[in-house]
Length: 446
Image 1 (cartoon, rainbow, N blue to C red):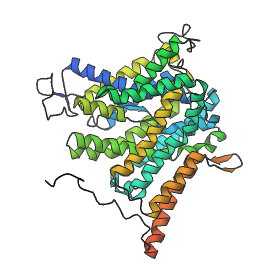
Image 2 (cartoon, helix red, strand yellow):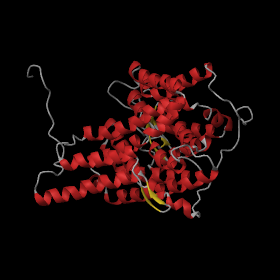
Image 3 (tube, helix red, strand yellow):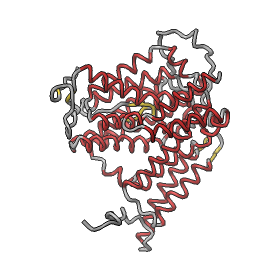
Image 4 (cartoon, helix red, strand yellow):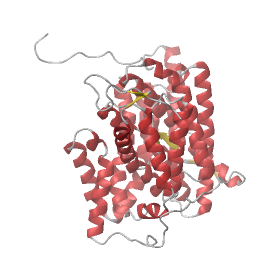
């Protein structure tokens, strides 16, 4: 079991200081912070299985197991909670016409895609650990990385509308609550506005008799999660795998961003050395989940928010959160209760959530000052976005490439081939790198 040094007096964090990953506060404070991480991850993590049709309890189990595995493989030096990845929503729901999966056969087929992505991500992690992460930046520069992340979110817009349209009044209340809480509260409460919005929507649904409690009373308080084995021997499962492959690029971006974020906030550049290990750990956790019926995992911005608010980066808090998720997974009744969330609540919250995935991609452009006066950058985004929003697809018999795959390939080809041609012809249409930083505007000079 890992051992942590006590930070300061064990009770408080002095101004300007942080509790480093190898440190901790006293155990009551550590458990309290661990509870905040559980709340922060919960809203997003349980939404993924509800939207996809995966078992909620199984997802929680592999989320907790994946977190503990991540801490072990990163040598307890990189704080992170592995929650359910939203990047998989589009390829999974595509197996059922954009709707939640309805049969065990559909789930086992989808798990093959999850498993393959996990294996590929782990392999990339080993490569990064051996040669560094510089090649990732060259293959997937900011304009491409932002496009891929954003197009996954925008491609899901029709799914959000389908649920929203079923109960528009309830969806509107839920969406309004999410937006209101994000601007009404500061700090931790503001960062879990999606979770709070779901609670408000659910309470309204209860008072308006829009919640169906079918199966809740019969469900046991304690029991095993529902396990499903990936259908790796079913040829039909492998036909859908290409739809999942672009998600690897999103997981890379999320994990690399998480590592860099923690390194910056703790003022410890040595944490960046664990980038490869982080990718391997998330890859193995996703492979494990995909093999037995859980949702794929990824690092969570919500938990970064908790660390930023508390200035506690202790991995001890994540051990608490991981074990708590595992315990919750062994309550079938909790999983059934989550499945009573009405479609209107899901429609309201996913309208915000899917849009936020798009905004994350756009933020990558802003943070890296992408120059959109350059044609190669313009068309990289323009073409990939229309493909994603329009739902373009390519079919060869039973084999299909969905909009996310086609959009990702288009972004990569337009950027790299377009750059090569523009630089060969010296037309100035290529990506010239980040635009120069602009100083403060207006006011008197300092």
